[in-house]
Image (cartoon, rainbow, N blue to C red):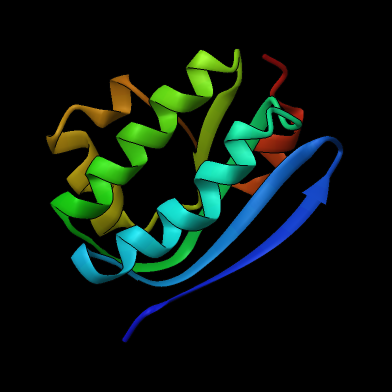
Length: 114
């Protein structure tokens, strides 16, 4: 099983809707999709819809961390929302809840102003 990524822009927030697993095999897919979007610097808020992510490995976490760092260099912010209980627990255990802005749902993300 891989990962599907669809893009949508709402109220100047670029939303990447992720569906599948974020593991060693698919993390590179996310990185290849996200890195150029960050580099162009067009969006200061990029949000990852994680509602359909059913597995997150350390490789996936490394990509999230690297992309978060790139966003900060562009004066932007990477937002995560709609995490499953299991994925949220993994991020909390790794201390990523102190690194990322995590929201319960899309509405909260759209209301967030950096």
